[in-house]
Length: 210
Image (cartoon, rainbow, N blue to C red; front, side):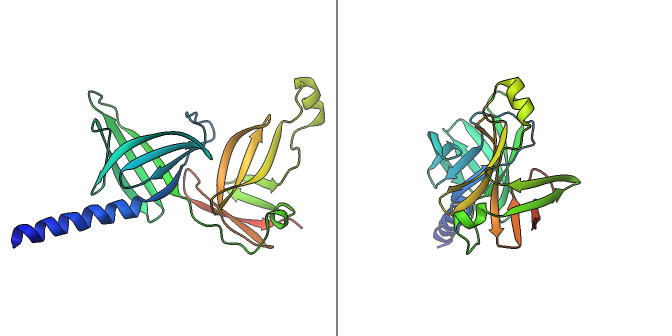
């Protein structure tokens, strides 16, 4: 009877761990961090881990989830630490290596909004994150025309609204290439909330530019 209870408890723990991790997770990064694939998004299931470069599928590997551990290809064990319900830190250490690699991910959730994509793109917002001020103005060339001519570029920097499943993103493009993404938690006629910042505060609220 005790053995059956222990087995049942173990299966419940394993199942709960898998369910807590199920879904898509975006890797957070500092602005100068270079990773391959760029704009990394993971899709975690109970038995597989899929890698995406934003919305482009890259690869899939088998995994096993035990408590707070991801066992990858039976050769690597990653420790998962929940920072909060929707943010995790994955600590990776491959066999025969002493270095420990830590990366943080945020869970992608449905964006709260009653606005259409067209209505969102007609709005502009200003943000302040740790004294770094920036504006979100969609589909407008943010580079100097003079610099564009000198560099012989058709486009320098532009912000676009993009979507994966039910999550909207602001995507910052440089020379037509997606460089940085931030998921949108909520957007209305008055404000926009972004999340997935690499450091606290993990969310920032932008006010509408009149």
